[in-house]
Structure formats: structure tokens, C-alpha cells
Length: 147
Image (cartoon, rainbow, N blue to C red; front, side, top):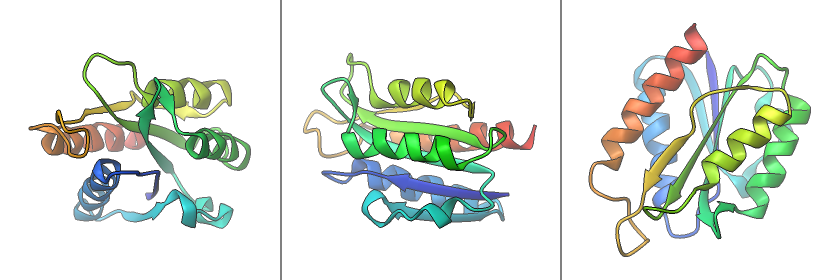
């Protein structure tokens, strides 16, 4: 399996999640790479079985670059590639991951349950327990790919 993780981050929590996902996949002995969105190149998707796209939630949706990249992923990846969206959000507000998941579905990609991760009250760190939540979600996504 080859996984590609691309994330947009402003204050750091989305990058932290991307690194947790990377570590879990690498520890499982699978091929994985992680890139901030500004380093994305279309060739990175070649041979990918799963693409993770992470974005902070801004005004109830993903940031512009993440939405644009979701379209590029949809254009370049075959339909059997699994697309997994994750976000950071404030409790009680709908998040970017749901919007990206819907976008992936409309583009015809195979999708997983989005990863929704809460921010602490300062909005610059993950809430307590979210690192473990990210580990569990990553394994759920990996089982989807293996099925």
C-alpha cells in the first residue's frame, strides 16, 4: 500500500495530525509520504492507494487550497483510490472534512468516514485525546483500503 498525506496548516494542529497519520502507517510497514499543501506536485499521487487531505476548518469549510487540491486529486486519481479527508475544528461547528468528503464523493472517488478532530479552547492545539483519536481513525482508514 502507498499512502500520500497532504495537509494545509495555519497554526500547527493539522500538521500534527498529518504526522500522527504518517507514523501510524509507517509503523504498519506501509509506504507513506507526507507533504504540506504548498509542496504538492501531481506526480506525488502516482501509485497511491490512498490519499489523505487535511485542512483546518475556516467558516465551516476547508480552506481554498484544500478545496482546489481535492478537485485535482479527483481529476488525477483512478476511482479505486481511497480518499480520506481530515480536519481540525472547534466543537459544535461543522468541519472541513465533511465538505471535502462530499467533494471527493461527487468526483467519483472511493471515500472513507472523514476524520474530525477537535481543537483546544486556544484554537492552536488539539484537544485532549485527539492524538489517540487520530491513531484509531488512521487504522480504520487502513482497514478500508485493505478490504
